[in-house]
Amino acid sequence: MNTPVTEAELQAWVDGRLPPERRGAVDAHLAQHPADMDRLQAYRSQNAALHALFDPLLARPVPPAMAASATAPTTPASAPGPVRRPAWPPMLRAAAMLALTLAGGAG
Amino acid sequence: MQDAHDSLVACIPRLRRYARALLGGRADADDLVQDTVERGWDRLSSWRRGSDMRAWLFGIMHNLHVDQLRRPALATEPLDDALPLAGADTTAGGLALRDLDRALQQLPAEQREVLLLVALEDMRYEDVAAALDIPLGTVMSRLSRARERLRLIMLGQPVPAPLKVVK
Image (cartoon, rainbow over the protein chains, first blue to last red):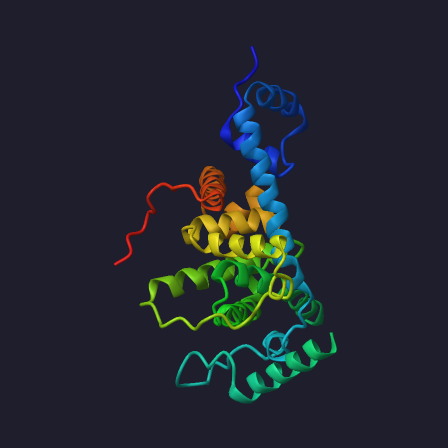
């Protein structure tokens, strides 16, 4: 008697993360449950569609201000006043937007 | 320090993609990334060298996003970034992708997070659990619910009542 297949294992099947020793059991389950097979195929299509939709965003240039915030020294202990500065100082924002516009025009 | 800087900057494109997918076209997606990078840099000492920096940064972003959700809702700025791929694409494929983007935003945020970390970021379930600070079983059940809800929305079928009541 095989260990019953769990929903978590079906999810792992979708992502290709099923341990090898459970593949046979899950494949056998899917052969007997076509509705589950359809559902899991739809989930695999979701994975592919999410990549198709969002992967192009990886090619966007990193705004200079964003990279710069990983160089500034950590907040000086003596600094009084507001804990948090505006995330995008206006000048940097304008510069970044200009850079993006130029990059967009070039691409 | 330079190594850490380079590693952190190398994570930015994925952080931006994830933030955009998580928040939809909201103009504050990059603000969330900016805050994440700043906080990550400030807390670099708490990053375990050799461990996955990206997963650690996603954890930071998650916490910042949760804080944001707890604050009273601000008037949300409309879409300001047409997706490079689907923006001008009026073919059936392009339209279907934009439907997916909209459907994604109809998921409860906690389900959307898990789905995106697994399906888009290809993170291991254990790493998602660690980044979001939730049990592995919760990751799996949210993943399962997110996928099924998304499937039903895309099919135009009724979905189970949302967890949050609006107004």
